[in-house]
Image (cartoon, rainbow, N blue to C red; front, side, top):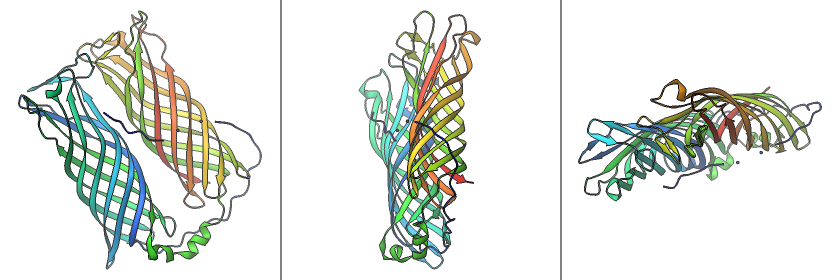
Length: 429
């Protein structure tokens, strides 16, 4: 099954910080009618289930990242804005489980977790209706959804595998804020029910999936109305942006990587998936010397990273399985970049720390590890000034948490590393 992927390092210096450019004031009225096109990225969390003539499974967790594009057209009906929009998303939304529940047995085989489902891509075609208030638009939206849904019962052959393009529905709400005559950013929540695959094979095997997604996006408006509106604002936006000084912000994103469990006898689980969402806060300070910007930043992330598996290369997790979780992590990094008016591209790197826990679920304390790990983080990012004080940021970090100290009767240990793609909103002081 194909898995979508998304974005991807460091330096330093010091001296006095320059004064900021004059504050840019964004005029208020905004014409929201016309065509728009944009990009978005986010995170999805939901459930998948399997079914056959032998019984049905319960709903089990399905989650992952997504990124894509949207195209739409809006027009006014009095004070109300109505429109239509279509979007297409590349996705890495997956779920695995091993269980023996009423009417459904999905115990692990040679390939690890017994049952798995995957959404590699999906799209929606929706209407939306909202109320514009100057540069802010709040709206409701709903319509059709479609996507690729694959599901399997591992080790059981083609009769227990299905991959289908499914049709369902999607509904939600959003908030969009205009930052210039043609540019706006949005945050949007959608619930998407992809429905069920066709059943196939001797056992009428099939699957269904539904999930909530939270995504942020950037839109560009076209047309004569867009070209003519807020000309004064475009002139103000041409003022250069100063990047020196203190900043603070919030972030949210999705992480995916690997965990490895091992012991003193050479047993190893091999690389197993570790994935989940992360959201948190950051603070930093930058210096600017012409186009060169250098600085330091620290961030703290609340995380929901989890990996669950049932077998490895030389490793047994028994019926209950093995599990690794990361509940929080933090980084302290330097960054160096080049600024071009309202855009800053940079590389970054430094130290990382995290709370990591791992266990063979049914074996108790001797096979349970709880530790605060030290490691490193490196990556790159782009920051765009929405106004003199507010900026939006997209960043990719690779975080290696190293290996925990050996513990328990067999000196068991665990290592973890992951790639983090996140979006953020910063305020400069």
